[in-house]
Length: 93
Image (cartoon, rainbow, N blue to C red; front, side, top):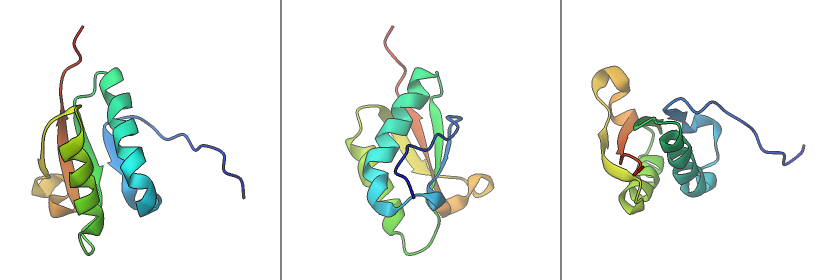
């Protein structure tokens, strides 16, 4: 097994099911930065329902991020409380 970086699409939907929880604190800010660079300002982060631990980690990261204008749990059509929608601040150009 190698530790080569894995590329995944930057399309405004980040599904954390394939990542280890310890990687989330670094992954989410990097993903948000990439989205904003691509003019994607609404990001859905799928953390699952489970025990809520991953959701709390995601919300903690979003609260501390200078890139995030606001965030909330997703609507029922977007995953309900198994996902969070983050609204990013527009780039200053």
